[in-house]
Length: 156
View 1 (cartoon, rainbow, N blue to C red):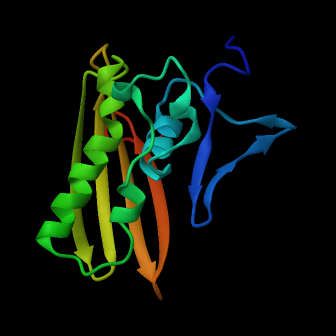
View 2 (cartoon, rainbow, N blue to C red):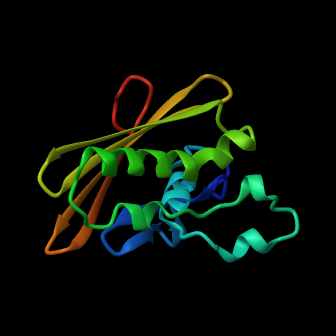
View 3 (spheres, helix red, strand yellow):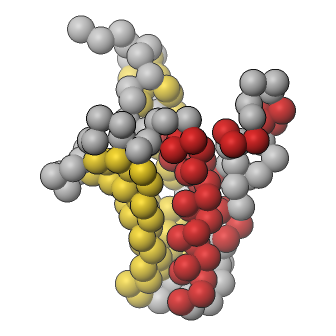
């Protein structure tokens, strides 16, 4: 049996940011699945207060300009490359700390006002986890949708 408090609080991506889900008065946990870490890395702005802590070296800083980068703009090849690079930069700390062996990012625009971001994290034990984010703009407002997949592309 695992401890009900094992892992991090699971943040669920919504159009209003992140939500914590409670079941029976207990918060849902993300026990080592990295989903919460990815969300915080992508959607926490640069200058996060926790970076000021003494033990948090510059190579381990959390926060990025990713969220600013994905705000409504015309979708061009250059914009897709910029979004891909900013996602990689936001997740680099995972490699620096040895949480991930590698992180790869792919960004496409399947239709007008929509981008899909696929992030593949290879953990130190070689387990692969994919995160797919669909970002839509309606009337200038960003609507994120997220799904997490295992190494067999089965939704988790």
